[in-house]
Amino acid sequence: MYKTKKEIEEWIKAFNLEQVERMRADDYLDYIDEEDLNGRERFRGGGNWSVELVVPQALLDLLPEWESENWWEVGVVMDDEGEGVFESEQEALDEYGLITIDDINAHFARRFYDLSLDEEEWWISLENEIEGQTGLPFEQFRINYG
Image 1 (cartoon, rainbow, N blue to C red):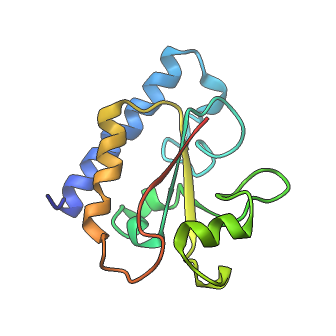
Image 2: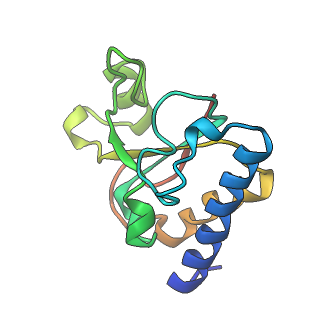
Image 3: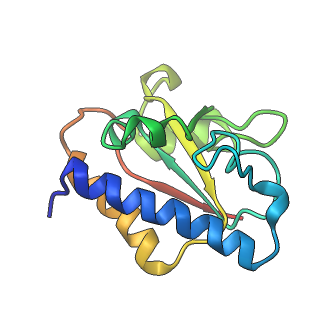
């Protein structure tokens, strides 16, 4: 079932508020910037993040601009600080069935404090919006648990 832009925006607004409330309830206020409730850095850096979602640009394009700005591009291969998707270039090539790393489209990430199963399934359901339409090797959510 396809979602309208309005449905997506409304769900994400409620979801972001729920994320902040969970952090408050767990007394995790150091990672909440009261002046910037939709801030880019809130769900990035270190901290107690239970889930990191990694998506292609086509999925970011479904999100409101203010939300897509909360995601950052990550390397296909992990860097020295452990940020990235795959341990090695060969692992990435094997995953996507490609010959060269240059054929893999960009990956974008965002970390979440906690996700319910329903929330995780909602994010994954966005795949239906682009599945099989991009012609790119990476067009689904990747979920990394912290």
